[in-house]
Length: 545
Image (tube, rainbow, N blue to C red):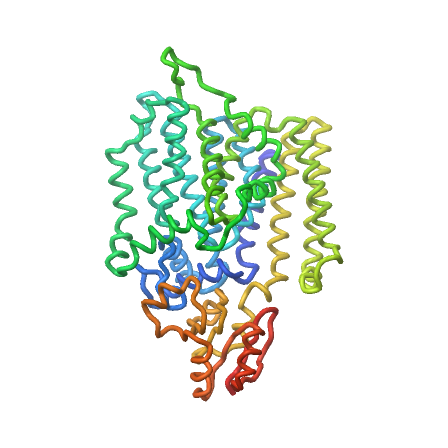
């Protein structure tokens, strides 16, 4: 085997091992990881597989596909962090594979490698590929739908098996809907419509395979919605009205951010290939197909569809009154493809600009690692993570240096690979460094201080990962938030007021309660008997005895 082939094979194996190894290192962080691990745990422990439950209360905010997959992972691998994150990790890894194969099919092997390097160098993509949320699985199904749609449309000859590709697109959209709701069909549908109107590509309508695609979509997506509506009378209103329209159009979730919120998110998320991304987004007309006698485009312009997809995702979520960093993730794979379509993606100017941005990022990370100007509380966490943060800064600096060396020697592919590899490894060290904050963002240590099978109260607070590590729900006290619907339907699962809890607590012979320090002070002033067991950054554990 030639040396170059051996090195490529070894790199692929090492990257694969590192990708999946990073899923197991950290405890589950709140809120998302704790929530999305506990729901499938309750399914597996004899709960309801139709209506998801969180802390033994109905939780209708999201569809159940990822919960089902994670519950199966728990059954095979046990209740642990690796199994909890496995679905997310597999989705991210398979997304890399799809990106490489799709770009290779559309624009050649060099474009395929560029796409792979871009995605692997995206800190947003890598970090969300190792964090338990629903967004990476959603992004994977959307990418699968996009890839199938491109394959169905890019060739216009009669022999092309476009019908099968479109069935794959319809199936992927159905699975995206089962992962996170109507957004799974809105993004592909809106992007295709916008592209068709802009491009005036009316022939595309003939290649949607509506005859078989729509029935397939309904057959995959509809059964759960029907069963959920029959099982819970509030489901249809809560899921579609509250969780879609009110969440998007009103500040009901209290996640209001400025309209430009996702711009810095994307800038930081694609930093090493930001020059390529800016050029691709600012020049949507490059590579246009020829115009026929009627003013319509001849053929299918994949790059233009990718541009529309990226812009729609960013604009759509920017207009919402509810914004989270994870929402913009589906734009990253499409943006990587769009950048790879540029023939000058690894030009000298782009690479040197990427190296300069990487060097600046290295300086920022090193300054943060050595910073004594931050708060005392944050400084204590920083001291534990400092070696890994220094490693991150050094990796980025080394990647920038190797990139410059590669450019100076005319080896631009090597320069791009060095730059992107440094960012991938740097993202890995950030994930390892996050373990230093586990006492603040995870309930694993708190759960270890608690015995099981005893009354455990969560007073005026709720730590999402606590029931998962306890392997049992807790009793909510004076806390509703996302449990409001569940508590309306099953009020016995909670205690409405602090005074009612005090009366219940006094009657117990034994029990434990978790609460913020300010709540501990309130109860102490009320003369409630408590004995402190342990203290955490923002929690106090007390015992009845």
